[in-house]
Image (tube, rainbow, N blue to C red; front, side, top):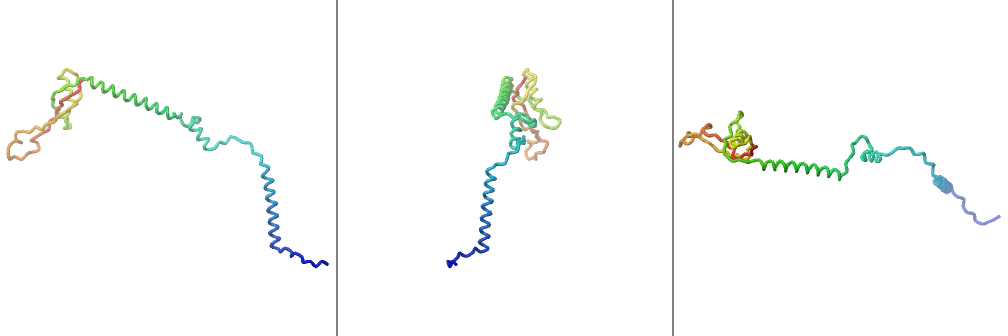
Length: 173
């Protein structure tokens, strides 16, 4: 018989730890072998994502939206419209400066609603100078009072004075 001391036998907890290690090593090896072989890719079918669909929508491939202009085209269109508006305004101003302007002093008659009708006065001023009709450019107003308003010590009454309007310059056709 051998009297050498023997190593103590592993306890149950040590056996459990060893079994867990062996199982983990075996599973890791299995995972490595599965990772080495990538699964076969399924055949791809046309299934674009949201970004692709939005790209088609804004690129003009979609019948939903009309063709979008580039920023350069939009700026060119804006400049063309602005140029047309400027040219029209310049034409209008040149016509106004070519129109004869006349000076004079014609009273504006009172219209049915009580306001002065200076268009009629401008027409009358232009006709007096040999033109058809016109538009008032400059007006003037003055207060006209009756003699009662000039009596010293008398209180001014509402009907004693009125404001008269006059056309002093007009552009005629």
